[in-house]
Image (tube, rainbow, N blue to C red; front, side, top):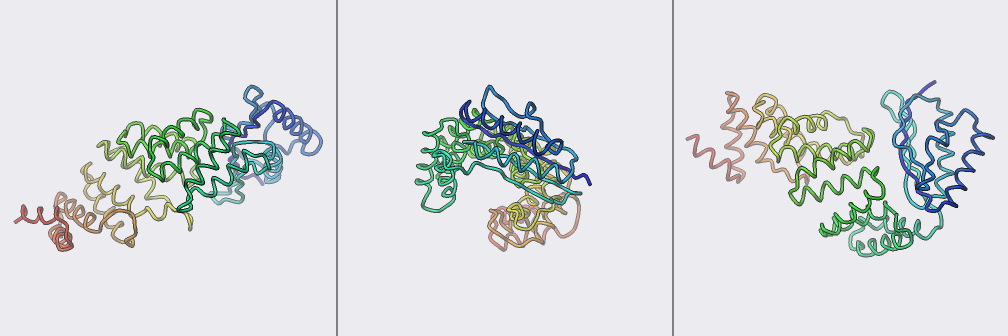
Length: 339
């Protein structure tokens, strides 16, 4: 039975010697063990000029045996890499049968420093240590794109935005296929108010990732916000509608942002004069529990009231009054004008 396989990624072997070792091993194992069970021919994925293995994106229907054999062989290759990762999925009608994240885990100094630094990125109070370990990885191998990307993330957490931007630029200069680097750099641009640059990077993060990955939907959500801030309402509606219609798996962090997305989707619809749809979006947002998503209940009530008023529906005064009673100054001002 055939299933849909998605495989993409890059492995950097660092030196011609390591590259040649991997290439010979790959060719030997294909010829002597796997025959026709491997998805990729060596000439399609090995690049001698840069000592790397590159799979920009493969999408195709394959046998489960071929998928497993290919992943097994790629996993063997990973042990020789100093940097990079490969992500692979086998999917049946939208259900993930297998997922593999292949990353270097050898005893090479650059690899070990990176692993240690990455583990400390989000540990409160240990960000300086994370930067130290990631810097060690870079010192040991100055083309370690992932170390630059993770160090940039730490800098962003520590609100060192210039440092974050520098390292994201460095990471993407080495490896322009890392979706998290585009996403991170876009967030820096968003913070700096450079909305056009943010949109361009969120777009790249979407293109470099697949719909099965949470980062694609994080990027769509924030791209929608950027379009809204630029008053590009049709584009904001497109991105936020996709996000709000998506059914996320349990445990996906995007679930925590559904209320936020529905609210901003409602705002975009309201500004675009799609009042009926805006009311529906605000209704859906109000049905979700309040969480730490930076959206106040009063904002939803006030804007639903405005949408009702503009569409000629009853009940708008009630919404605005409720928002005002909860301390919303804008709602109080609207009530004065209505009187």
